[in-house]
Length: 128
Image (cartoon, rainbow, N blue to C red; front, top):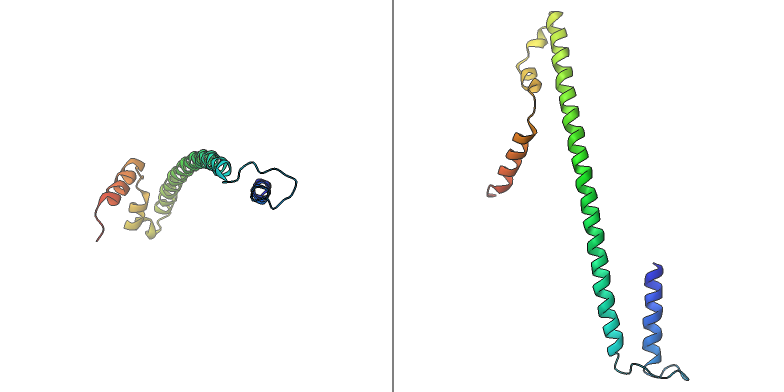
């Protein structure tokens, strides 16, 4: 906010001085052309800084998304393995739920490439 306050003070004093509202200070920009030029250059620099900041934030978001993906894939692998072990224990103990067909579906390994391909296909398909 300090930048905003300094900018506001400079522009307000510039606008007060040049139409001769402040006595004793000579007018240096009666048509405000110089002020417009400074404002334009400042806008160019500010927009450049904003774009750089957004690019850095996007790169950080991409890194976090990659980390989340890796963590989720590792968790998926561990859960699938635990399910297989639990099912084997249940089968060994003669528990009938061990033969549930839904567990077979859950026990299959997920191929991240296939999931990504499916997501890409669904993004490309036309919406109804």
